[in-house]
Length: 165
Image 1 (tube, rainbow, N blue to C red):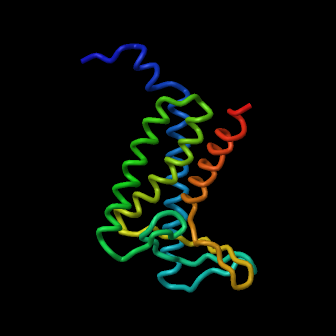
Image 2 (cartoon, rainbow, N blue to C red):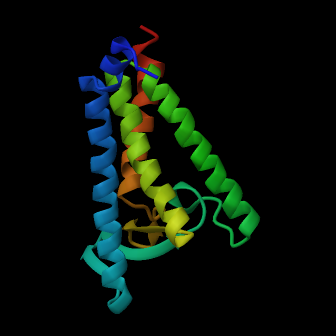
């Protein structure tokens, strides 16, 4: 079966290649940082950066920022399946989106695929960025969570503020 020239041009367009590079770059950055922190903390304690930031490994079986963490297998598998379905939906949205939206969806996809990879390989996501002020600690998170959050915040901001004008 031959692919039409128009479809071939869409598949190999500059926008698609840039989107794939964004996804791949985020995935690789996420893998490098998680591997480094896991390897470090197998033999060492947490890393004190300053009075507001520590790097300390926490294995998260829930969703972003440790929410819905449960030890029950059923919850874990349902959350993993939901994340997989969201990734499929985001791929569909990315295909249909304009270039700026493709980049935003790519930020989310890069982070989501990084976290899904961990769920499939380790059965938990290594979170390690611990922001805190004195005894108040924010949720522990990772690089993938940062890109997911940035993408979601910008998309919501665009929908609420920019598109309404």
